[in-house]
Amino acid sequence: MHPALWIVAIVAVVTAVSAVSHRFSVPAPLALTVVGVVGSFLPWVPAVELSPELVLIGFLPPLLYAAALKTSLLDFHQNARPIALLSVGLVVVTTIVVGLVTHALLPIPWAAAFALGAVVSPPDAVAATAIARRVGMPRRMVTILQGESLLNDATALVALRTAIAAGAGTVSLLDTGVDFVVTALGGIAVGVAVAYLTGKLRTRISDEVTNTAVSMITPFLSYLAAEQFHFSGVLAVVITGLLLGHTSHLMQSASSRVFERTNWATVEFLLENTVFLLIGLQVRAILEAAAGSDLPASRIVTACVVVTLTVMVVRPLWVFPATYLPRLIPSVAQNDPNPRWMYPAAVSWAGMRGVVTLAAVFVLPPQTPHREVLILIAMVVVAATLLVQGSTLPLVLRRLGLGGPDPADDALQAATVHQRSTARGAGPTR
Image (tube, rainbow, N blue to C red; front, side, top):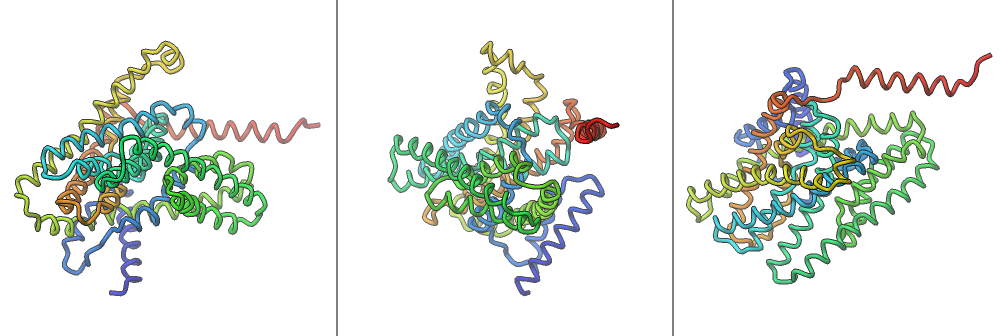
């Protein structure tokens, strides 16, 4: 079949499954993953190779940018501490712990073990936002999870690159720290620069279509510019999206903002859901590759199960202390009192991995020992967290007594603000 027909088929399946999922109140990411797994074993469905370039350049920048545009910079700033502890602290701890566990289970070098730890450490931006939006969560919890998922990819990818370089014997511990700081600061600088230049350009554009077209190329421009200088392209895209989203009312008319958001909603819907279908379609090829390994099947299964459990257990072991220990400082506790235990419990369970993990594991050099087994482990971690944590998250939230804000209250508040703005704009009447 012609590649163009496969693209049409994928879009049609994504649209149909998403519509059916919505009809039966089933999270679309989970349904599409299952459909993809089933499809990978059908004889007429060709093997789909999810290349790192396709994900890291084609999917990730626009999805991160779309999520960042909708994230309040003020809320992001107010929750900077928990976001940083999750997106940096938890990713580093997970990388180390998984690396230690993997090295104990498999005959691989330390660098490869820590590389796998970096691969499976970041909860996925797409999975977190898609499922959180679907099941309904308290507003602050959604902000924290979105902030975490926007930044943790940058931390994980830098850690992965460092581990691969360490495997080649080209970096020291000092080099690792310096590289991490330079990569992060460089990504932030590029993100700020692209946001400034793009903002200046868009203030001079009045046409809605042209304005939206500029918006569509912005994440790719930001990502590629940062990567050109070996900075974090992911961090650059997030910073660009946060700043442009925060200042959109200054550089766009109301109609232009509505037009842009409508177009981005369509792009986000297609890319976001296609990602989960592609994740499922990888299963057969990954299983066949792992079957050719010279390691015993029992050892491979044990490694998959233990690493997956490690990923799921490390998160609550970090989240609870990271939630309550900073509040032992009086100034922190005064400004941000202790939340009930249900909140960190829910955040602990919302650790779904996704497409970034699968894309990153294929970055491992071909000469990596037992590379096919490491890829299988990453696939199992993604599938288990998506299907186990993702499918049970609504039940966990209900049992914990947590839910999203009331849409009726939000609509009432929006109407009140609109009414007051209209009254002020009208001025005194005669």
